Length: 298
Length: 297
Image (tube, helix red, strand yellow):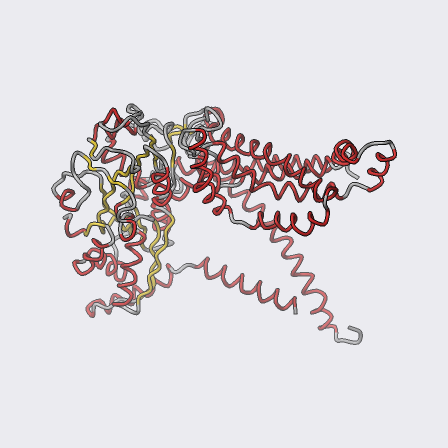
């Protein structure tokens, strides 16, 4: 009896291994081939996987659900893993879409490989500086932000607040949120990694901001929706709030595009899905989830 | 089994044997494959990305995101991991040995019926839960009592010491339990009190087993990633004291591995950190073996 169970278990293991090993790129290639004939009918089928950025993941999941309802023959799996994983996997052909917070070329060193990848801008994402509720500052200038995160300014009174030590909370050096922060606000001034602490995710930053007096950090606006809408105190940057209007008017600098990276131009179901994420039809949902519809940015 | 056909004999004898032999070889193969893979990836830092080994092992500068002058010194992480692990063992080992004595000599009924199950329960708690408790309870408590941000070396040490306590305690309890009863009687015969017998005869006699437990606890502390990463602050600098944040090898790996790309110098450097971690655990296993062989019977 035991032996039979063991055999079954081994068999199951082997089969799972084989399935996982094969992946679905082969089958998709065939199915997309078939799709070409049906293109005129505007119906999609096939299996596709998107992996990568955790910032884009909630939006991609929601879009996948709606897209699958519209086209029941399509099966989309959305995974996280980080922007690096996304670009890695799509470059290796393991997934069809790599979600990334930054253009793929910024991640890849080998420029010959970078040429094969196409970055599709699918949405915008705004970020906000957040502080502990005891901080009495409402707005910071870009210069003040640079001074704080480079360690030049150490007390809130130096930027118009009360006499309290500034506790900087950063994201890890490789994080997409941090990359956007450095590009749009620090502008070449180096973030001083030997001050403050580092937290790994939006959730960990929220926890640390709430419990640490005088703390300052940055989170994605898509995290501050729903029941988290008023969880943290956000700061204005140069007097501008993180709204779509201010971003469009170029008053608010702290935002970036979200990319769905494909190997070569997107085709068939992949193209259909990416177009759906960018569509007017899905735009209301994009806004509701705290992202910026691409149609409002172009 | 008598009188059955050879085919049945084959089935009942050889299939099982083949299966367990296969499992044995599979594990050896998997372990070797993991080691070869990590080392081959780890070495790429030096062969492909031309990072110098000297810089990696002796420089305090870690800035792989600096595109103009990337720096790959791992000293901060190695020191951070070492300090937090040794601190945890220093805190945990005396308590674990006390528990082991308590279970075997002071109150064995309570020890086996209550204390041992409690220790097993401690092993079963996932590390993320320890980390979460650390962030919500320990970190604010440390901040209110000692100032600073609370995320600190000492927070990591305390969380880790609770996590490795059951490992050290259960191995130490077995070791102390295995000391022959004659030792106790002999020291009574020489006129010692019970406590003198325990502290001067029993515990020293179980030294080998206790040391094994301590080293295994140290190895576990070194490899623990999540709970420590959640409370230690992950600041890339050497700690200036117990209440200052720092970073560990495992922490920097969990934070940056998924966001960097295969083949980049940054990613290669992280693989080298993983290799260093692996070599350190090998070192601990060697120590355990050496302890086991010294005066082994």
